[in-house]
Length: 85
Image (tube, rainbow, N blue to C red; front, side, top):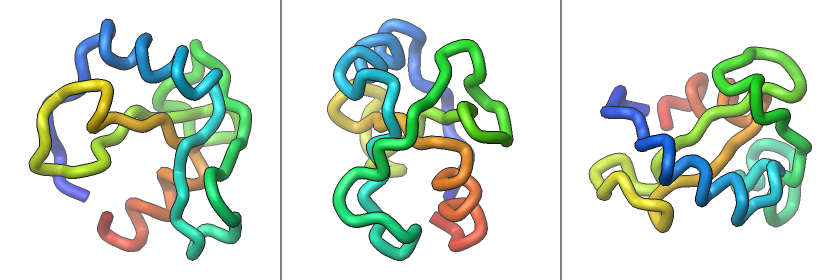
């Protein structure tokens, strides 16, 4: 996963509303089928534990838009980092 400019707050808020504060990761190698659905806690952005979450790009080269952004829980984010996504 390459480092990139963070998503604007307005975009993150739109994505948070879309997902209802639940992890949108769909990587089956993380041990879940379909979307993970783990509950995230809004003030815990960047936190490494349960409830923590990150806003990540679906396409690392894509735009900073809600369509290219997804909320992922801390455990899924850790697995993404470990696999180099």
